[in-house]
Figure 1: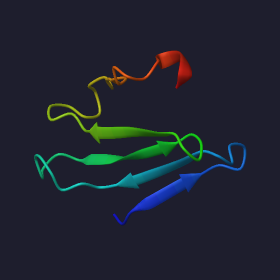
Figure 2 (figure 1 turned 120 degrees about the vertical axis):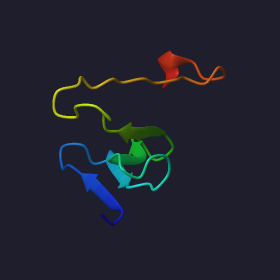
Figure 3 (figure 1 turned 180 degrees about the vertical axis):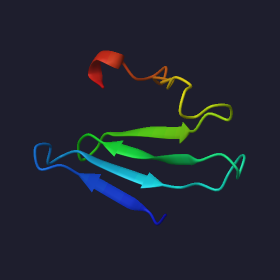
Length: 74
């Protein structure tokens, strides 16, 4: 998969930029990138498929907010 950017006309300032990294376990499907929510704010993500039962295992979302960033301010 080549680098990809997804947009939606309802959200003109939002864009999802996705790459398929080759780090970690090469046998596990993984994607990383940024969700651009404004011109200056970008949320990083890394998706790694389950190693056991990808179709049956739940999706876990874990995020970290920098100690210097107030969660209410984005």
